[in-house]
Image 1 (cartoon, one colour):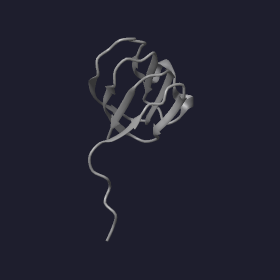
Image 2: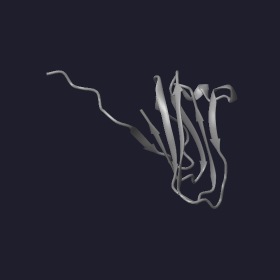
Image 3: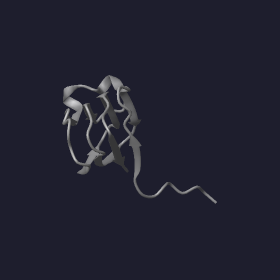
Image 4: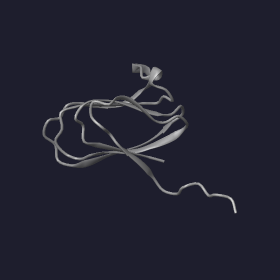
Length: 99
């Protein structure tokens, strides 16, 4: 019996200060960003399969240092053709949900 692909959404918790991280090096859908609450730092998300592609032209969304924020979800449903890479600074409390 062949293995079936996983169903549903996948997620990755952003680790602050990790700099550039490739989540998926293939076409994907960025479903949402779940902001866990107060944090200090930034999170930039890119349509790129490599960290070399984290340029302004590939930037999809950037969350900036909000300091105080209540937990919420930012729905995006964006099709990323090349891949999903993020760049985090500080201590962002964000979960990236993708498919």
